[in-house]
Amino acid sequence: MSIFPDAFRFELNLTAGWTDVTGDVLVGTPQSVKRGIRASGPLDRVAGTGTLTFALRNDAGNSAGLEGYYSPGHSNCVSGFGPGMYGRLIITYEGGEYCKFYGRVPYGGIKVETGKLGMKRVFVEVRDYMEQAAIHELYLPSFTTEKRIDQIAALIVANMPTAPLMTDYQTGTYIFNTVFDTVRAKTKALTEFGKLALSELGYVYVRCERGNGEILTVEGQSTRPGKTSLSAGNIITTGGFLLQENGDDLLQENGDQVILDAILSITGEFDNSQIAAETASGDQVYNVVKLLTYPRRFDSSVAVLWTLQRAMKVEAGETVKITGRYRDPDGDAQVSGIDMVTPVATTDYLFNSEDDGSGTNMTASLTVTATYGTNAVEYELTNGAGTDGYVTLLQARGKGVYLYDTVESAAQDDDSIEDYGQRVLSIDMKYQDDPFEIAGVADDILAAYKTPLTAVNTILLCANKSASLMRMFLAFDIGDRIRLTEDVSGLEDEDYFINGVGFDIIKKVIYFTWYLKPAALDFA
Image (cartoon, rainbow, N blue to C red; front, side):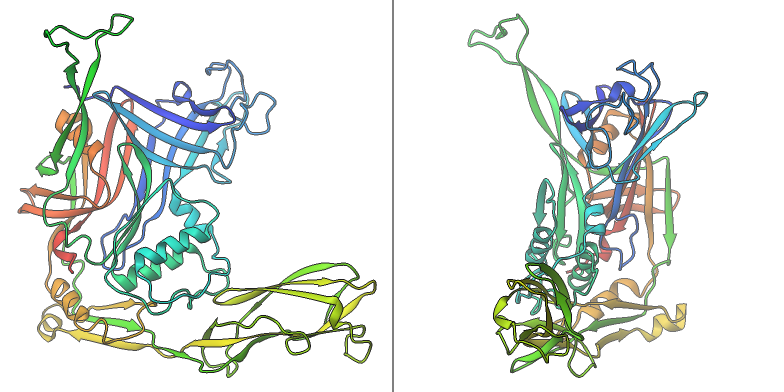
């Protein structure tokens, strides 16, 4: 069994399709991957943007023999190379392929090293799906009710222009009564994932598995506590050759043997295998826990939630689009809209030849189409008349959903406060509207965090140290449960969940870091 992978393959999806650029990747420059939740605090529940970075040879010694082959806009640049292209890293080991990163190159993700006397390198950064969530502003999401975290995550993804290759939505614990009523102007999908994760006490991240480098994963509060056994990782190994009935090898037309693949299941147990481990004792002690919930009030009748503040000109034959964001008629609360009313001529809009409304009534010539979201309305206004006119009235009517002051559920441990000083943990649970629904959760969190816990936050390992470590590096990923023994800190057979991963490839040697969270701190 080799301690080195059979191959590393860096691929870019160019005009010609997936293209192997490994031959031009500079091995003297580290290739690095970072992704997932690279922390382990109680509020660290959503992954940040994951990245894959590498450098390409851009002088005439590259595979195409062309200087500027990887310079966007250069006459020699390969077709399709530029921002927006997809990239992936595939590692082959013992005949099996493992996609360890998949993503897209953003604007600014290509850095060309210039100068005739320079090294003529191009640095490429590929970012995973969490980057799409970080930049996408939710567009007029529809108000809905009674949904779990897994169902809401699917709605968020449906609002985005691109979907992940695969999804794994674990069933949530809570049914949230209102959905998207806290969305405001410029609310990002990642922000909404964050609200969900804190309200559920779950997790959102991108996971890589053997055949797929992009699985958007959503965990409910009970997902990790339900994993009571160590995770089993699957490795593809060569399992011999296909035989005939008489025991002879079955050969292909070219005379080669037919290789059989076998799946080897392994468990993640690490006994002092790490090069280094970062441990901490008591860095996450909390003896006062506050859970913030947000009761809602619903209108029983239709109210005006938005009004055009001054007359607006629409030229003859012109179509314009405007967006109005709902406001509390009383000005005291955040408001969302439900049961919105289709605009009614003369009641919800007026069109006149004069901006003060004193001219000819042209309302019959104005076509108004409204698209309602939970926090705003988008109007498409078309002037079908042969003359210019002014919209002198435009309003959105519906029933308001109002958020006022929060309700706080709290628990504290006086003995812990006396021993370690006051340490407050506040969890903002935007989707929770009923403090009684989460009764007892503050006590559960307090019980987990009131006493100092010595734990490993990160471990650094060299995958090439043994075939066993290479297999574990390839087989395990974020969300898996592993077991550690570390003699220096006195930890023995302690279980952890992998929260985040990172690794560097330096001349075919893989150094990888796992960011860990003690399994004891994930509770039902």
